[in-house]
Image (cartoon, rainbow, N blue to C red; front, side, top):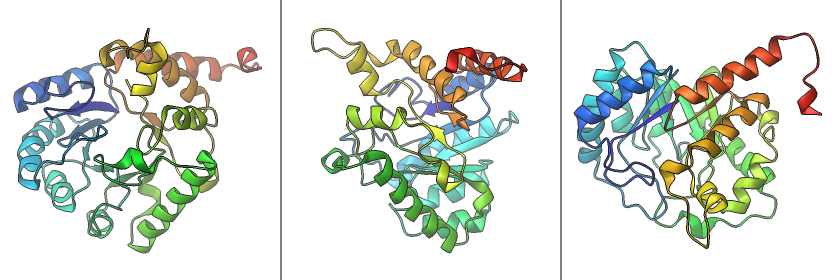
Length: 271
């Protein structure tokens, strides 16, 4: 899933693709690199971010969704608002990527059920402005799994087709760096729920902290190699997908893992 941020303030590339023409060109480049899905978002969800108005979010994303849908690559709309989801689907989006998993707006789950589109549900405990104050866990994998399970139950009760649901553990959302590492050390912790899993590791702050020096974070655009390492490991673990800011090298990593898995012998490097 290639990321197309149409925002002025996203943590990684805020402002770089803010103008529709730039965002469309970037989406086309990601598609050319082999993206399976183009994820268009008009609201930054970095910690502390303020929400744009609904009208502003629509202004940002609709022309981009419409143009990219013409490429023949599935387009997802990254939004927590039912009205944005509905209008983006009308412009050609076929997936709703909702970082709140239906919790931010009571109208989202019925809207997704009505539209009959794919639905990515992320683990969520609150909006960006205060989500990190809620990063308190006893057992991170268990609590994230149980909370996502309840979100899924709500989606099914609203009529969302279970065959169209994908789960996202929400790295960095109401989670500290240590919490992220705990989840990544147990990549199959959501397996009991029985749904595909999408991981959003790309350029996250915990990688910047790992790779930084003398208390300084490594800049987001210099975290791609570390992100690629996780793409490889998550592919080995059987993840459904990864959400990334770049695509080409991640396609290469998945191709290597696929080739190794296609052989008849054991994968010696897995131990």
